[in-house]
Image 1 (cartoon, helix red, strand yellow):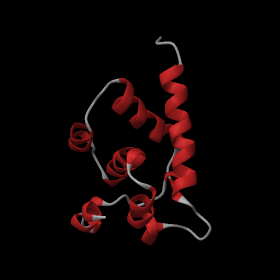
Image 2 (spheres, rainbow, N blue to C red; image 1 turned 90 degrees about the horizontal axis):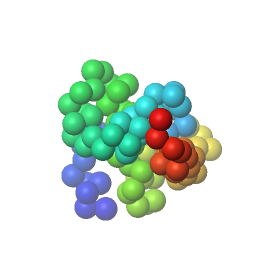
Image 3 (cartoon, rainbow, N blue to C red; image 1 turned 30 degrees about the vertical axis):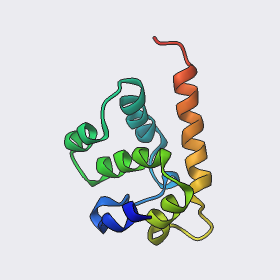
Length: 102
């Protein structure tokens, strides 16, 4: 919870996982987890708010559920559960990691 307090509104993702283009989110997942690029490196390379949002979402894959809900709560559509949406993204990552390198 302390980490959440330190984040200002500009550091929080502008959308939930389910509200961004899947292909773009998968690309950031690939760069972060398969290429091993750091979150800081990806944020520095981001050219616009859309790309920064994608990087921020990928960075939230490992935060606690309460923290995730707190960070995304002001931006959620009715009925959206960011924990469920994040599970889907984690499944994509598991598929990527299990796939043979090409």
